[in-house]
Length: 179
Image 1 (cartoon, rainbow, N blue to C red):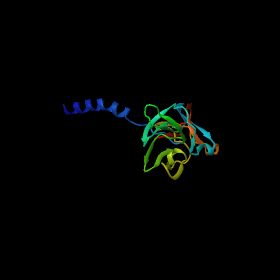
Image 2: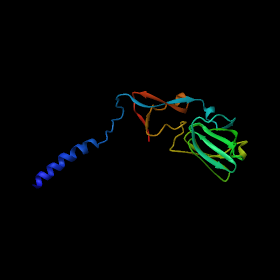
Image 3: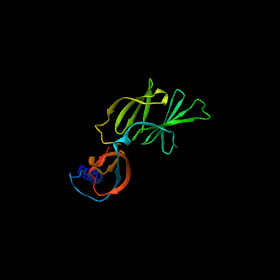
Image 4: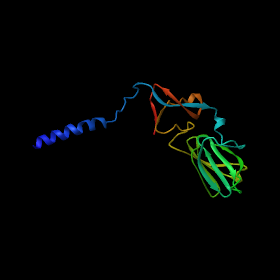
């Protein structure tokens, strides 16, 4: 009886154990096409943090209220600034271009935001001028905008310039993966 119970359990659990395994590819191994992201390269001057004229909000992310200002993140490209003195009629102030930006916070007049794989601290000066205080690299990434996490991506060729964005694509080689 004991042997029968043991064999029954083994036959039930064996398929579960086999399907739960994770395949680790051998380095340099090639396999079929995969959907992922290709880097879009640009010049280094595009990566400059800059206060620009206001523009339309297309891909909003986080919203932050600071004194009478309303900040709306434009995912991957920067932060819209509105004067919210009259909440029923906010007025546009400008747009802070910060490639790769997805998050922000403000403390003691300093805007902390992610920018091209770095954490940047900016003094706001009532959003008339921006003064950069410091930069802190995130995850040792200094190649531009971070790839989307959870996807394969075409490995970066530093000779082509700085990565300013990512484009969804299908490709053959899965050598790079963003966690």
